[in-house]
Image 1 (spheres, one colour):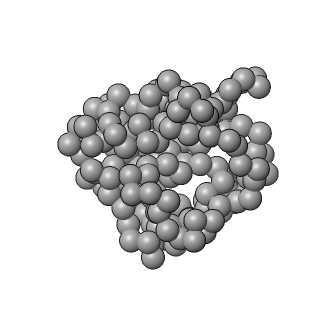
Image 2 (image 1 turned 90 degrees about the vertical axis):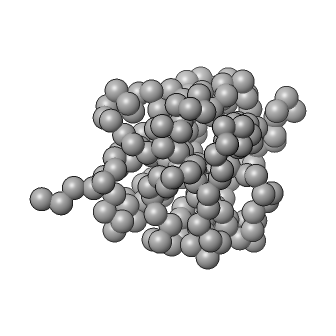
Image 3 (image 1 turned 90 degrees about the horizontal axis):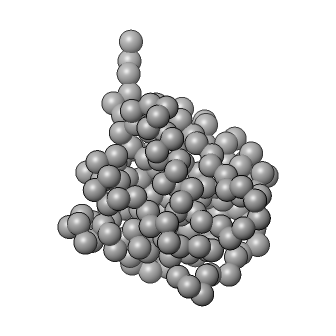
Length: 182
């Protein structure tokens, strides 16, 4: 019998995007099967209408996922991003990986060099070392930049596939305004 080398948890912080979630699942299951990944997708939703805290959702899902299985790799994934290339492997390398390098709405360019948002892969070992995401970021934005700072502080670096491989399509949606407190 053939077994995958790693168990992957894909964590999706979610709120009020049911149509995106259906499209995401329809797109991702075939891709992950082609990659022969041993994966589980966790959709974590914040209750109520209060200000969104993406980092808290991702941290809570990380803890819950470990209660479910001994995952080696965690991929934190925005529900509105769909990978375009099967060579963009859903696994964890030796360093944290920013996976959504080239997004169509950004003309397939990085908006800025230290970005670590959208889709990122972090090993269990590194997530523990980095103490997860900061729960202090309410509203849209900031938690990914803080994680990039934590990565640098701990003498790790952000790895990336080339732009030609790490391409994503962003599903259309109304953009949230960045939190003024980030």
